Amino acid sequence: MKINQCLRCGACCAYFRASFYWAEADEFIPGGVPIECTDKLNDFLLVMKGTNQPNPRCICLSGEIGRQVFCRIYEKRAPVCRGFDASWINGERNLRCDQARLAWGLKPLTPESWVDSPILPQAA
Image (cartoon, one colour):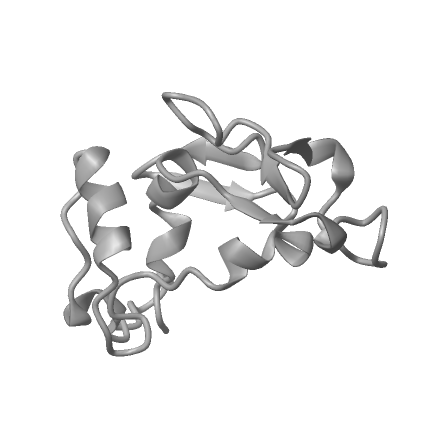
């Protein structure tokens, strides 16, 4: 069983600004990013609330970074979030993932981070 390292991390959601085209919001397309989770960045872009500040943290991120996190709007998350791959999840390093993790005091992921974990026997 693979352990999704992103569910332990969340560093990218509390390090980068998450901006995207305004028409990706649910005001304009069904199933889009909930407009109440966004702020206007400019005439063309919205930004996830909380990410356009000196100490960013997306308001949709719940939990403790580096321990256990989840996105409260995961199925409706912004396209920029959908396109952000953790380092080595698909066999390639993502230097931006590494950068965010290091900023939070977390070690960069390695290819071994995504190896199937052993299934432990259950107590009888």
